Image (cartoon, rainbow, N blue to C red; front, side, top):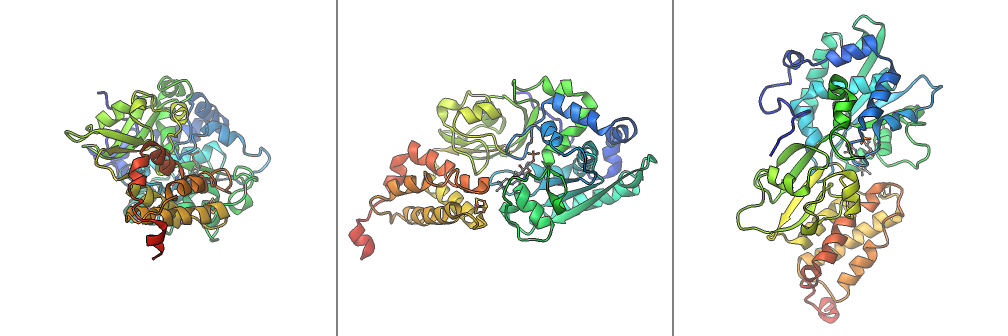
Length: 421
Ligand SMILES: Cc1cc2nc3c(=O)[nH]c(=O)nc-3n(C[C@H](O)[C@H](O)[C@H](O)COP(=O)(O)O)c2cc1C
Ligand code: SF4
């Protein structure tokens, strides 16, 4: 099976953390070309032509997002989202640690594209090693004159600030991230206004994912047509998929969008001998499962949505017949409930009630009516919250409850009377 290597090229083979090694492979030539020869609008046009969509979760077209910036404001910020706390996602972590200069070059190009002179990178607090590696790469790039003032002697200035998070999943949501960067409590803001209009320090701001920004480098190098020629009609280009769970070779795999789900499982070594596939969670902890009958579906934004799930951040978790789905659902619901910032009642209360019911099912102490009650609560949360975290609590749970009802009902062993005794 063909293995694609674009952002992952060289990772695991050579040490790309040093600026010399990165430059030997053509690193920073696109950045120099951008500053010397291109206008921001040229990069926006290239991004639009390439069909690049955000790799952080929502899949929003990158060029279009940039085009929402007001034309008349001259202070703008770029924020590179490296919070990556979505369960099952570990691609940005890898890029930060193994290809820090690629991430930095992507950030520089992204900032130039939106005519920003100050970009931030928000790094998940737990990524201490990645933070240290990226900070060292930044200093190397600064010493080489690629960051700071009068870059390449052109008079163009661009500063980069590195900010570490403190371990809150919600700070990956773009407006919570902006609050956190401003030193406020990391909780989502009401939208509108959207960050492109009023973001960091009330200035127009673009938040882009690490992988999104990194793809700008090869897109500029090889041309937008090269990227757009791969993938499906609306899901163009490549994507790093973090494959985990019951496969023989879990890890990050870079694929062409539209690759069949079955082939991704095979890329990761397939199932363990003698095991049967039960489900795949294709787009991170927030996504619903897809099942055996969808294994030949293409892995792209549209197909995953049509399958009742989403591609999300590309976290692809495989479950075989040894899975305890009640335990898995409890684990995920507990995570989201714990990470809720508490502003919205359905998210705060719904999450914690589902967690409590699931906890007694895990311990086989369910009471009659629990199955129905769980489904009822799950059905009254989504669409009623300020940010998508609230809508992320139920998709996995509901998908496996409807597919494997007996696994849940088997944990209802007590009567109401014995439960109350
Ligand atoms: C609860 C929550 C957590 C999120 N975590 C991340 C994250 O860790 N990294 C990320 O890039 N986007 C995350 N997002 C999506 C961001 O809000 C935002 O859409 C994304 O950074 C935009 O970048 P993109 O357009 O390049 O995908 C999260 C969203 C929510 C609701
Ligand atoms: S949905 Fe949950 S995490 Fe998001 S703002 Fe509301 S309470 Fe906070």
